[in-house]
Every structure is written in structure tokens, then in C-alpha cells.
Image 1 (tube, rainbow, N blue to C red):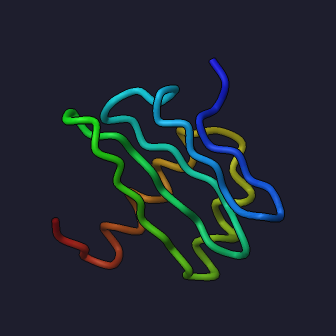
Image 2: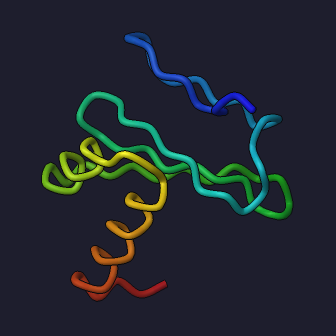
Length: 82
């Protein structure tokens, strides 16, 4: 299956019909990480992260598992609550 987010110089394009519900997708655009997921009611949720250290760390990841670990560690270190 094609990745549902594409990036170009003009911006990002999201294809929700290609997204699985409750799965996190990401892309990097203009020094920002964009996190997108479609919830169980088919609503799109988008989050933007500008923290430079975190963006650079994500750029160097080889797979989604590494990215998820980075986010988990960041959440624990920053003591971020829901």
C-alpha cells in the first residue's frame, strides 16, 4: 500500500482513504514533523512538532518502530500527559 502522505515543495498531500484507522503517520516538511492519524470516527487529527532536536532525531530513523520509540521517550522525559 502506498504511504498516504506525500511531500513536495508546495506542501503536503494527505490521502485519508489510504489510511488505517488509529495508525500514526508522519512526514517532515520545512523543518517540522507533521503527525497525522485517522480516528475510529474517520476524523483526521494533525499535530505539528517544531522542536529542532526531535526533528533531527526523526530524520535519522530507518523505520516506524524507531520513530515510535523516540516519541515514547520524549513523552516520558517531558512528562507530557494526555
